[in-house]
Length: 96
Image (cartoon, rainbow, N blue to C red; front, side):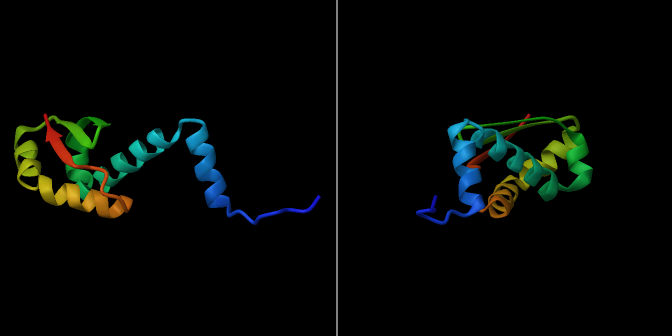
């Protein structure tokens, strides 16, 4: 049997994720890891919950002073998360 077309493993893996409905879950994990990288260990320790839906990243912060600091930097944080991921997927950061 002869192969008709050479396919890269990355393409096959992407097709597998799409066909099994796993793409959104992988994307969510990438966003959460990017959050931890961007805000650093200090602020990621204050993060109790993270949720992403429809371009909005919701983060529950346990410290009011940490929440205020992150609120002031929210546009920069969103920009850096999108740079790490390589897509403009996070539109809004909502801190609770």
